[in-house]
Amino acid sequence: MILTGGGQIGMAIARRIGYGMKIVVGDKRLENAEAVANTMNKAGFDAVPTKMDLSERNSILGLIGKAQQYGEIAMLVNAAGVSPSQASIESILKVDLYGTAVLLEEIGKIIKTGGMGVTISSQSGHRLPALGEEADRLLACTVTEKLLALELLQPCNIRDTLHAYQLAKRCNVKRVMAEAIKWGKRGARINSISPGIIVTPLALDEFNGPRGKFYKDMFSKCPVGRPGTADEVANVAELLMSNRGAFITGADFLVDGGATATYFYGD
Image (tube, rainbow, N blue to C red; front, side):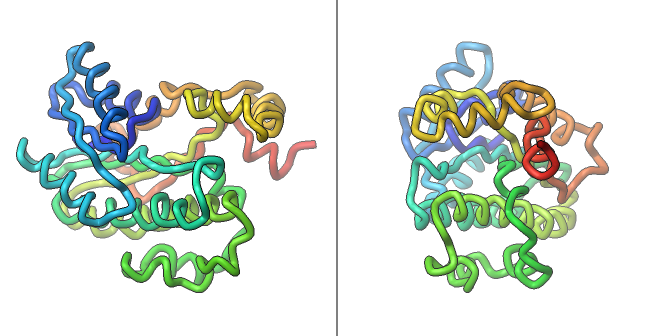
């Protein structure tokens, strides 16, 4: 298994389905990857950390090469990325949009027959108004090295970091649909999950930051009335990454406690 991102959601998924496997953990900060690997190894897993920058193709290829030293890659859990509060418009597009597209593309070339993948998107992608059939097609199918040159992704067409993040997450969902066709030729499946507010160390920072009231209002007004947990995202991933999800590929699952429903149709 390749696990990208040293956060709580990725680790929760890996702990749910990664038993009996070598798990290669990649993160831009090696100490984050080491922390995840250390926690998992103390719980009986077999994880090794490595440094990986999702915004760089060569770094992604290096991660894949390291994983292949242990055998064929059977699973991908991509939970790496940056948030609107963490990064610039340029970084969000380079990491969350371009980097995810490259990772799905490169893993799709070598994924083991019967393999499975899941990438973590976001409810934010569901809040972006419809872009139109042509824009969706471009996000789904444009050659990865030309993605960031698309007109709709130019700085003059992006309002702020949140808008960039929404575009990146919409692109994630469309790339998963397109890549599912390619993965299918190898007998493999790929899906995405779009979480809402999930309690993690990063989320706690957001709750106590300048956008804290916005986030607290979001989950307090949603039908479930609370934020989610990483293990609740892992529940969905476990279905998608098991034989019980054998008929599911190219799909996105919104796991947000109904926050998006409230956004569009609430009081």
